[in-house]
Length: 363
Image (cartoon, rainbow, N blue to C red; front, side):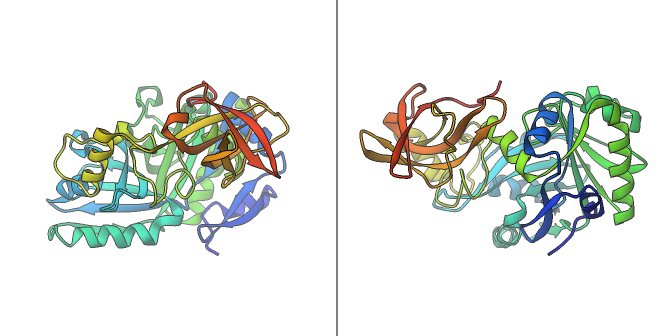
């Protein structure tokens, strides 16, 4: 398994380590997922997300290529801005969701760790029609920390001369923090105020940044956080997870990603399918739900029933630490997708009542 530049910090803190996307990653620390979740919601938490993929797009046709490749309108981007988007196959199935960064002389696409090889293959295939485009996989060059929570500015501001309060949501600055040149991005996967820090350098450089951030956050209740709390935090906000809620078998409209699918722009891969779904309506929708039985945890793959008939299935589920109840996402037939619709999660030969609820589950 590969190791990130922060691996020594995880082992020193006695994190529970697992294999994830080919990397040895922390799933939780001794304090536990609930403590990590609470720290991010109330104070500040730090996630090592260096396993994510970064692909640079260079060349005079870079924007034209990205417009063809992704569903959102990247022409709206200017230097210092980021955009959430997705790539589709010709049949509308989602290749991956991603972030697009507009840097001074190129773009950077940030993709999911488990999809790096697949995404690169797809990008390369699509780039064959754009001879001026050059793709560079720089995934293993970058360290990436996500510092998330209401006290993240208090924590990080002492480490940089950049005014972090001026960095708006989905914008970034290139500056120095903890002595390292980096991209300081106002983004994250928790739904809280937060930053993602992209920087290059040795593992020793990475550890210097980790130690600086942890020391700066001591008075603010800082907590190292793993993949477990990352999942409960994103689920409470209703954020999609590739491989569960969005896959090559789902398209953006039924997945609730119509807001990033810009049908008014020039042709992009999968546009016809998305336009047809928008015009004719979808057969199913991705919905959120809250389980009434506090002891039941919904899990991906569980059937969703109405009147003893399967009308869908769970794609993500867990206990919400903030609500103390089971929450989840799943696809259901359109007629059962309205908020407050009553559904049943079928597990262990029993039905567990749930109510369709529009995310976020925690405001």
